[in-house]
Length: 220
Image 1: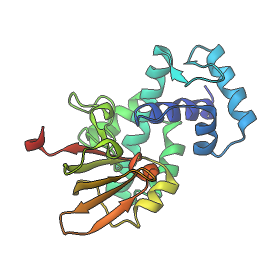
Image 2: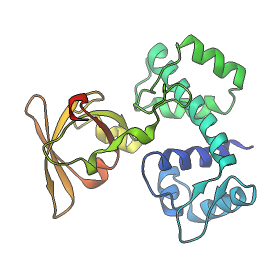
Image 3: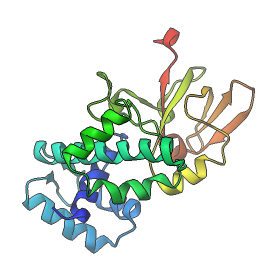
């Protein structure tokens, strides 16, 4: 399979497990390709049995497509851990390097790298590494936009998208940081949050859809 097809499957997987509706438009925006290119590739992947797709409904991976995408995502996230922990890449620039490496990584190298890193549970962006999650998956996370008022939560994952990561880095928020949802603002569906240090931030709905959290243990 070509790297281009693999990238589509991986991005569909990422969107599905980030509670995002997968559409042609969303893939066009995420992958910076033209709409006709997306339509053509999705048609090819449908014919090959990797996805289920209709023009006006969401796109979903088939069992066959999910197995392949999950393996690609595992390779990608393992490389991200290696590059950040050992070569001092930042979480903003590590994605492109991991993209290149995943396509040339066979199962033997993947196992060796995973063992060398002592089977990390999460990638630098907080996403669960398939097969290493000790029973957890990304589906166990909560989307910040849906957290109830006055609920303290811990940021455990952020959406792996370069534009968003650049924006997130300017918010003075971090992974594993505890925040409390103060208010849902109905006019534009934004969210007012407060950090443990008392800093208050208003975040747009688009931003809070890209931040994933878990409730503090005493809140479960």
